[in-house]
Length: 285
Image 1 (tube, rainbow, N blue to C red):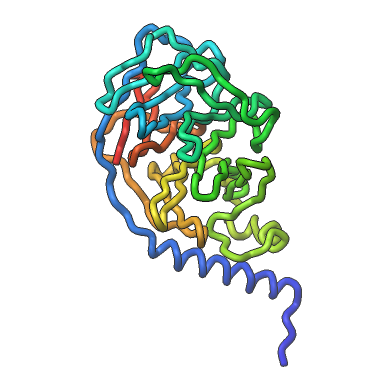
Image 2: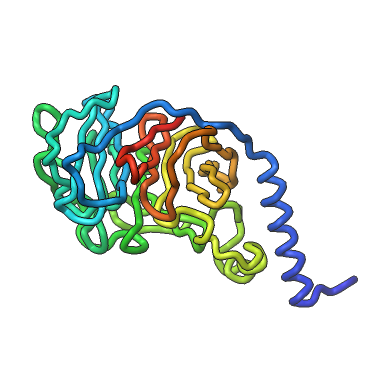
């Protein structure tokens, strides 16, 4: 019986992983997104150039957005049609990185820069933020710029790690986390580290993707997504298998840039992209 050397075993493992991933990639469906809505940041909010995210509060029937970089940068609240409801002077009150609606607590929440922790907004009777409450103190995220995405089904917050082509899943209650792979299926961490340079063909994944942000859609079989700015597509993945199931293209003639970090979000069935020149969030579906 033929014996496999360490090198031949490695080559076989890499080939198997590559074949499995390539086979799955061929199954990914493709479609083109369409513009649905635009949320225009008030002209008075001149500070800050990076959009944190868009959160939709289904009970309030309102969109919440904020600019990242300083607690005094602007925050805005819009109605379902994109009409501004809040004062142009409304502040974020935290140096935000992520923003989401928690359907379990029925509140608008987010995560802050560095060790600012996870927080929740206090809303007045009209649904306008008046203050914040800290949910979990300290740095509960992979790096300073990590943008959180909340999954109510698992009561967990996801943070993308582009270089490792996966994400950390933080338990909302305990703060404990585990690493989840995209596309490597059941490969264990030791094996993944061993073959990664071959698997990625020597490419640093962070050179392809918006490295700070992933989104949770809740769409069956396409629950999580990342923004590939080299191919100019949104990639959606099956949360159970880790494999890519959809590639979403941008409509022709839509004139705005996509970025390597922040400025990408998902809320109310739409993918949102912050247009820095027009200072508005563009919602595509």
